[in-house]
Structures are given as C-alpha cells and as structure tokens.
Amino acid sequence: MKLLKQLFWVSLTLGILLGVVELFLYDVVKIDWVSFMEIQPSYRPMEDPLPPPSRSIPIEGAIAIPGMGAPENPTLADQASVTRGAELYAINCQMCHGQAADGNGSVAPFLIQFKPANLTSAVVQSKSDGSLFLTITNGVDGRMPALNENLTVAERWDVVNFLRTLKKAE
Image (cartoon, rainbow, N blue to C red):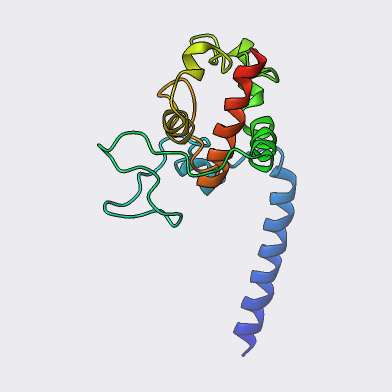
C-alpha cells in the first residue's frame, strides 16, 4: 500500500514537471500535427464532375435523347418566362456575357484564351432553341461551364426565351 502511494506521488510529480517543461517548449519546438483536411483530395467547383450513372433518368425527365437532335422548346415565350429568364441571365450569365449580352462582362477581361460569345450576334441568334438549350446545359469544353447543376430544365428554357429577345436589340 505504501509502495502504491509513493508510486502515485512520483508519477504525479513527474507529470507536473513534464507539463511545465512542455509549456516552455511550446513555442520553441513546433510539432506539425496531421490535419486531415490537408491530406485528402480536394476539387474546385465544377472540376471533374461525376457522370450520371448509366441508364439513369434525371428527376425532371430526359431533356434530350442522344442521336435525336436538339429538343424542341416546350416553354411558351410569354412575358413571365422572359422576365424569369432575364433574372436568371443576370445571376448566371451576365458576369461573362455582359449586361448587353455582347460578351463584355466583368469577368471577360480575365478570360485570356477564349472570350465569351456575343449573344446578340447573328451566329448565336441563328441557332435553334434546342441548340441554345444544349449549350447552356452542357457548356462548351474549355470555354463555358455546364449550367445543368445550377439551373433546372424549366429555368434553362426561360433563359433561352430571354436570349431570343436580344436579337431585337441588335
């Protein structure tokens, strides 16, 4: 019993001394602790998105069937759709394509290799609604990100309807 009591006091004294020594060495000896956030793989937004599982159908239904061409615009281009499209354009597209959709947005000067498209140009306006929809959905490799994760199918059609009003402002 006496031996256990002595062992306890010796351990306690050594523990306190070790604690005091560690306090003085805290700023002298830097120990690099493992941070699991540093060693795990990280991805930037929209970098290498996982493809959808094979034979899966989006919850909104199939937007386009491969090999069947561009889809038809199911959304009536009424004032409500164009207004929603203008709001969505201002949020998702204006930073690159600009307020006037001429490709001179606030981000455009920083895009050195490829400038954003002028959406009022005859080339863009001559494309079908389905082609514009697929471009918004899938993006353009190395030039424009796909917006299928940002906008629902109905919202993308609203943006297409808004883009159709731009040819009048040309």
